[in-house]
Amino acid sequence: MKPQRVVCLTAETTELAFAVGAGERVVGVSGYAVRPAEARKKPHVAAFRTAHVERILALRPDLVLGFSDLQADIAAELIRRGANVFITNQRTLTQTWSAMRLIASVLGEAEAGESVIVAVEDELAAIACEAAALVSRPRVYFEEWDEPMIAGIAWASELIELCGGKDIFADHRGGVASDRIVQSAEVVSGAPDVIFASWCGKKARLEKIAARSGWADVPAVHNGALYEIKAPDILQPGLSLVHGARQMATILRAATP
Image 1: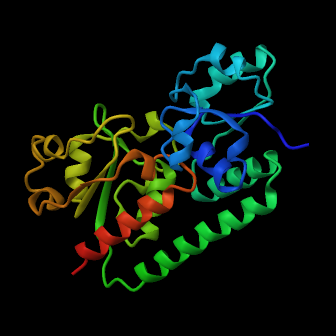
Image 2: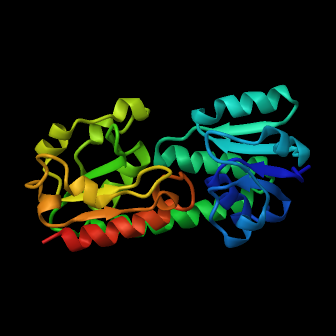
């Protein structure tokens, strides 16, 4: 039997639930859920690292969906209180598609999930095909956080390369956030042609990035090639990654001679 009362602790699980036709069964969502628009009307029961456990339990969910080891404490408390919890912990694009298939299956919508995922994979393949024709690959620094500076998570790094760029910190992509801390001098020596910033949970201040000591001659700063990609478009590993990829591809095409 399909779960009839579903709580989604994160934006990407919410978006997928609606995309596969399970939206009417969603009874609670994260406050960060923005897609689809109708999801915003659902009761808000979580941020990302925090959740209203009592509010969740009051909704009588037969399934709670979430993402990331950062939600481990929330999951543990819900499990102790008798809830059924399903958490994925994807880092790469391949892991993301696998996680989406698992979630769709748990929702009882495996066939619809496959159709949705194939459509996303096809769109990214088309972007990659177009990017393959670029005559050069701009060097890219993706900043996920500012203090300390944290380079992009694996799927962001992979999307940079899929869209035609070269991630200057590709060797950091496999780690958790603490493994992706970088130093200012490393960015300067990496000489990125483009800087993407997406500060998780707050607006990226491009003017502050440009004003960092010693960064004036960094090609991206010198040429004004600094861009914010909003967190819902690039830091939520699910359907919304297509939005971030489109933006990256457009910017990197313009940055290519």
